[in-house]
Image 1 (cartoon, rainbow, N blue to C red):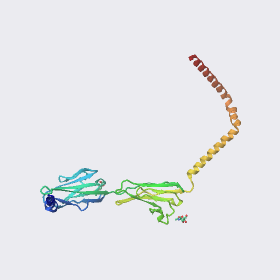
Image 2 (spheres, rainbow, N blue to C red):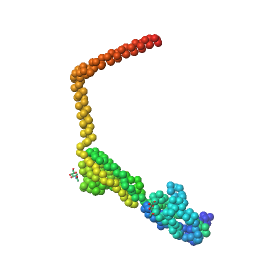
Image 3 (cartoon, helix red, strand yellow):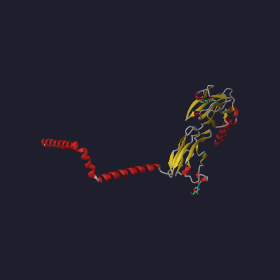
Image 4 (cartoon, protein in one colour):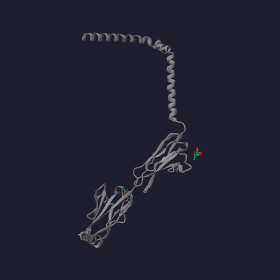
Length: 302
Ligand SMILES: *[C@@H]1O[C@H](CO)[C@@H](O)[C@H](O)[C@H]1NC(C)=O
Ligand SMILES: *[C@@H]1O[C@H](CO)[C@@H](O)[C@H](O)[C@H]1NC(C)=O
């Protein structure tokens, strides 16, 4: 029984798989294809064997799991219209790739007269995109001994850009310890995020900086920016000046306090006499009136 079943399975298998004239079989030269944006690329769908004269050929684009027609009823459709053509036997030639073409493409061939009348092949296309000019942030001035980070980023490049930093037109090595020139510098570079981080700024770290974003499709760099490193703390000086001013005010108030009599009496003597006395009297009058009124009211209520 088992042997019989195995035999029939083997026979069926040899009919479907080993006798090519009875079935359509597709092949591609590349299942994973890279192209540069704005350049042509051909996705190959080679028909290894077929008996049907006029097979039905279709191409579908599958992006985020959603299929859409690229070649259907003998014409290019969808977003590849006017940008692609079918090359015999079933290759898809994209004339001017765009970054939006990054997707999976499925070549499907249906051959009605063949025993195995359908085959498909999946090709994944990735379109490389050149980096654009990265946005760089370099502080204009920092203080010796402080930590600081220089940043560099661009989001267009595909695959994602790697970043390199240049100091006075010389590339900073990934590890400062690896170069005698930068051995005393405390920076570290994150090539993936574009960060250039200094743990402690030195006078020698001052200078012109720029950053380069690079991937297989190309590279771009931001304009040079100057960074100064001061060995005096400008913020600290500002705070000290503030503190000194505050101290001066405290001293003046203190002096005034000691000569309180003088400070206050002089004010009263000169400007207060004529003006303040009546107003003080008014105040007392009102207070008394209010108090009496209130007492009267409250006693009345009780
Ligand atoms: C390719 O497409 C881009 C924009 O879609 C266009 O600017 C460029 O001129 C095209 N190149 C060719 C060779 O058709
Ligand atoms: C690094 O520091 C050491 C010790 O302070 C010094 O002798 C050397 O000259 C410095 N090297 C550079 C390149 O600044």
